[in-house]
Amino acid sequence: MSDIYRYMDLGIVHFKAFPEIVDGGGAIIDSLKKLIEDDFWTAVEIGWIKDDKKRSEVRKLLEVSAMKVCYACQPRVLSQKLNLNSFDKAERRKAIEGVKKGIDEAYHIGATSIRVLSGKDPGDEKREEAKKIFVDSLSELCEYNRDFGDAMLYMKIFDRDIDKKALIGHFSDAADVAEAVYSKYKNFGVLADLSHFPLLREKPEEAIPLVEKFPMHFHLGNCIMRDRKHPLYGDLQPRFGIPGGETDVKEVADFFRLLLKRKLVSPEKRPVVSVEVRPLLMEEYSEAIIAQAKRVIKLAWAAAQE
Image (cartoon, rainbow, N blue to C red; front, side, top):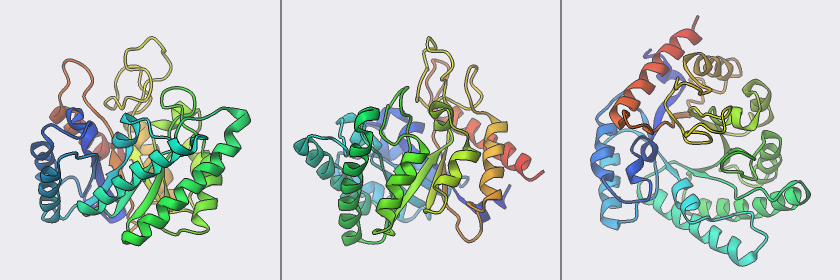
């Protein structure tokens, strides 16, 4: 198992593992300490931290952790319904300024990468126009980010028509946007989430090649999308192997094999590959879900070596 760290930094999304902190408050410090003290993880993804004092304490904790730090704009963007591809100029400006505050926060805590996402998909007729607007927003954010330092900005790909209903969206559209932005800004990349392939009705082996020429990070997660009546239907990041879910050891192992085959994880690249799961049912709690995710990774990596 130890050789996995030659190929990637194993991360975990802090505000999903401990969902009570997703709004930027709560037991941020105590929950983060649990992840820092667990040397299985070599990276951590931090979300919105509203309190300046807590943010400074987080920075100090991360400084001594030797973990790679990523900052996720999702909590900030989704809770405020910010839309970087809005046709309304005032609304788009609000979204850009909101994400810029996230970039400020990312540098404050020492992040080396930042996750951003598109707004709602406007439908077939206006999608191409929305993509151009999104490219303009991302370009402004890449310029702003470059003025700060050398952190990378990664565009996370979401579902198109089930839960988040985001512009980006299918991997072909992600490739179009990435091509336009990366041609000018080399501090830009793409984040592919294993849990979103079923929601997009796309296969990793067909979708990943569309964006693999850009810098990439990855998420490992699960979803429930075949039963619309299921209480956890949609993009809710349930535990691996949950009945009715799409992802367990086999799917993670297949994903590892694909990334190895295409040399997207390697001793030269070592991207961040983060787990994004959370407790959702009455009998579930954070520590158990985290431990279960670690077991799945261990078993999947072993299977991928066979």
